[in-house]
Length: 219
Image: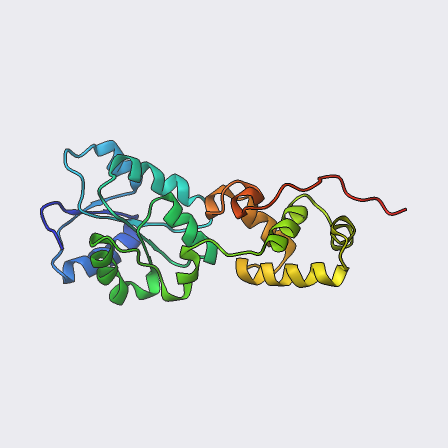
């Protein structure tokens, strides 16, 4: 791993001490900062070789934490260290510009290998989240039905709109939920509409076809 420029460790006191201990054990050079704003405010003349960023709550705005760093230090891979991370927050981190994710419980074994991987141009995430690196592959009908779900249609209305049985709608939704890693309509809608989860602006990011937005009224 290159040592010309020190690693930038961005973390509050308690996690900083633990991460620093791992780096010191490997005799890696690093500079500590209280967070991303502290590094950006310092305006170092040379970009760090790597950035290790502690994120306490990955659900509350990964984009805002990572994007300013990628814009300022484009050549420095960013590794996010966090207590836990939901399936699609991994995609949010990668979309924002992170190159790696390490869980706090795996810090001793996982941090240095992750740093080595991203330094060599690889993406490194926890094994159980590897499927989230790429967008889900949904069928055309699944995309269409999800589009109607986002618009607020219920299963019966979707069945009328698409001239299919309600059981068919339920089957497609069950399949789509499994691919998205969600368990309910609300979770699916929140995922699709959240720009920080890596699926973009609404159902269009899934390649959904334009559909009629006026529900069919029962006669």
